[in-house]
Length: 155
Image (cartoon, rainbow, N blue to C red; front, side):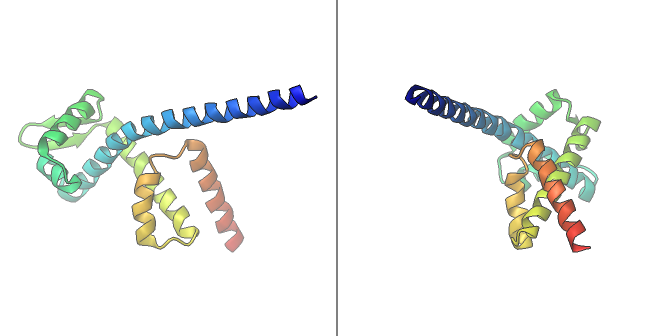
């Protein structure tokens, strides 16, 4: 009987370790995607405000050097998220627009959730900017369900 307990305990530890390793991998993957998502969101915002997004404006908003922006824009162009037009700036493709919209919706959802928990709106907005990139679709669905049930409970 003690052998079964040891096996069960070892098995539980092994599963927890697997989960931790998976979590590490997922976090690294999300960090890579976070940059792409931040860029397309910012480009969408700049286009909305100014009709276009220029490399110099992107660098200023993100607080990075223009060569850093240039490297990322090449990556985004290779992934068909943007098109660059000489003397006109950067524009989102349909794929980039769809991703920017998706990111914006996640941001609003996470911010709304944090505010529902009692976090002040300004803090929630800042925190949501980081959290939105690192939660799974399952978590997003659970947040939606929670917010929907919370709305229903208030009505």
